[in-house]
Amino acid sequence: MKKIILAYAVLIIALVILAFTRSGKLSLPFGGPSAQVLVGNHAFDVYVAKNDKERMAGLTKYDKLDKDKGMLFVFDKKDNYSFWMRNMKFPIDIVFIDENKIIDIAEGAEPVKGDENPSGVPIYRSKEKGNYVLEVNSGLVKEYSIKVGDKVTFKNL
Image 1 (tube, helix red, strand yellow):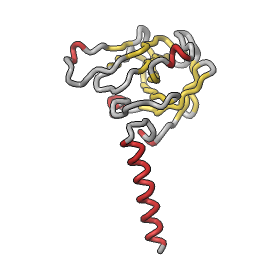
Image 2: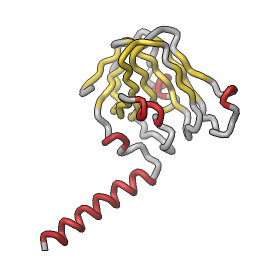
Image 3: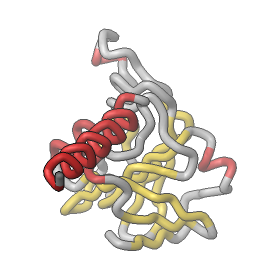
Image 4: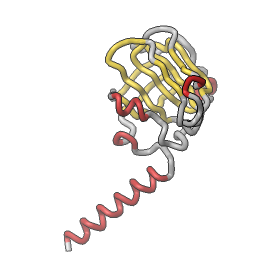
């Protein structure tokens, strides 16, 4: 009897996970939101991309991003990191961060279809060296009045 109940529980959990991932909503990548980024008075629950595989995948497999969610790219060393929107399905704002301060922002980065010429794909690169990049829904930088120089705090990073 216990085995049957356990089997049903596993099946239900698997179906819930499948429903979330197939819906295109950013809900469970990399094990779910694992940290928070505070910019001014606003908090974003973020998924953390810490290794090359996670950074390369980024948000490309999702159809949309819940409003106050984001993805935080964490780098071991400071550099002028470049991002592009190839194979993305929705526009985003890209916030470049050095330690705990915003150093550059690319607002309204539009998706580019994967079959377009890679040499024509816009590249978004920070003007200064930093070690974090935050991606959030397009328009949130303006809506929350986020600007270069704003202080950033990380929780559970």
